[in-house]
Length: 303
Figure 1 (cartoon, rainbow, N blue to C red):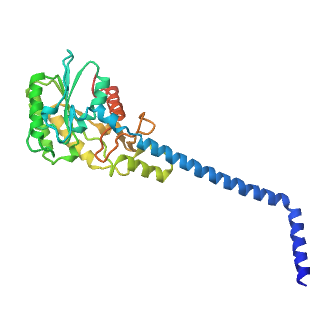
Figure 2 (figure 1 turned 180 degrees about the horizontal axis):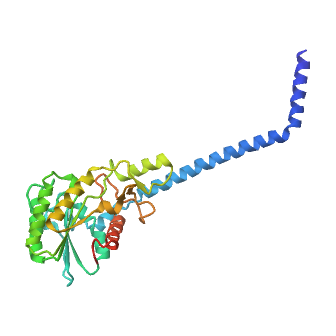
């Protein structure tokens, strides 16, 4: 009995297969195509992830450090005013003096590249804002450095001065300090003063925020909003009021990099890397070039 049932079942299965072999073949083919497409998607996913990681990580920190003249005209926290090295050379062009901390220094590559009819003189120092008031910087020797720069202002008589800093790193008294600095410069006859606002700042940093945005959408994010430190807008508002009160030019970096949809990451806009690369939010050399180019095109500053 069991043998008969087995023979019957086997023969029936064979007949069914013979009758519907086309359908079975199509099902098998569809399964193979499905598996292949999944493999391709996984491969493309790995490639896309590698591409985004390459773009996020394509920072030449040595190149960026050289561009801001680190250790020469952008001092380390361990250096003092005597360490400024060949930051000024006479060339007969109107002097534009760049004064501030490392967030002023990261403007230098763009200024030096585009403002060929200026003598761009850079006196910047890490963790030392451009202050005429003592005990504002978060580093030892900041007061001494700023006193040195004030003497340079008297000696060089710059026609223009640009003031910039990582304002969010300092106590609230930095706003009254920058007001005093502007008054000092105006009394010394500086014709044009630019007060730069705070760049966009992401928590913990832009590379991580960019990668998190990519993981959510599987698309390279051109702009992102999540992770943006909203206090940067409050800082800009305070600086803008100071600029209006003193009749100087306020330069909003946020207006260049950000809008209602978020802030530019730098992907597909800059030649290399992102707008900023570390927890502090320093601009890269490429984003410095982009910023100054945009400020010129919008006639915020002039060649």
